[in-house]
Image (cartoon, rainbow, N blue to C red; front, side, top):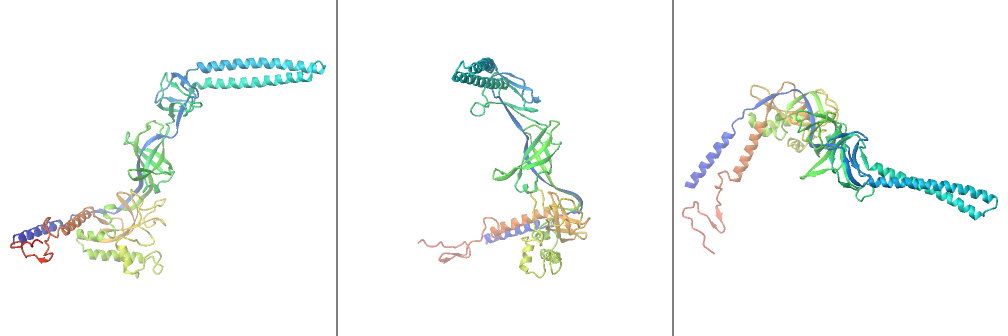
Length: 486
């Protein structure tokens, strides 16, 4: 008796709590009006230079002079690094002397060749002696060419010891210091020593990693807005240059790098700055819009009817009738593109559950930033572009002082806050905001599952089994005889 009494008290307490939770919520409303809806895709990224130039020296030796530091701005031809020139200067002097000797030898050989030709004509010397003089002259010519080439190479090595800026830009990294011995970039294994890194920072770009759900809406040439942490109130305008084809996977999330070019004439953007990029996907001006908090799917709407004081079965019937009426207007036997009301009930039930949408349109989404359209230009109400993607939804329109009715509408472009209304609503309509009601329904559903798991009572008071293996249990715990041990 005592246990039964406690069980009844627990059931009474749960029922009282449930009754308290089912109290009607205060439903707020919002007015359907015209707005500008902007659909954009956002991602985080970092600023980087467009073209980085690694400066190396073709000459080996010790650095004897450095005229720049990190952040220095240089013009083409400005001195950057001077390498010790003693070795290359000696090589140049030796090559110059070799060229002078070769020129003198060529003059002598030329005189001997002419003299040999005259003597051979007078039959004083033999043909073999004349040919030897001709060969010596040809060798002297070749020696002059070799000496001139060696002198030119020595001159290049001497010039290479003086490293000058190849382009205009800013020094962004310096990897050597005064007095350090470096290796040549042309003769040493591994490409030689990198002296400096420089880039033109008048034009920079942001490498932003966009989620794969948004990358389909991003195209080269689109306008973008970049905001960096250093200047949160200063947006920078840019253009999407390209989308890299290779994805980057971070913490099991697939991302695609998008390069956005930015003008940096004022020099505010620095390499490595972190920020956020927003790419404008689509913009609609002066379109009829409804708050996203008022829109529910055809499957969710009947479950929220109780919060508005409506009957769930009645709301389901109204939604079904509206969808059948809207669909039948477009079938070949009742107009193009709709749903025949004579279709089997199973298909209609699939529509009510949200598994399929009204043909020929499909229920689609356009990424994290909203659902809907891909039209290139804004269209006024009633002129939604042919082929644009739409979806269906349900709102509860206020028709009296405290009365609401469900209405099936078509939705177009949307973002986090508002969605374009293609049809089903008029400007000035009052719609119910169902965010709080949806939360309450979810809470009630969770409580119901909890009560079903506990057998309708409090935790730890599950219903005891009535029978045991091989014998019957007594009606109460008092006087129960334990089964005999086997």
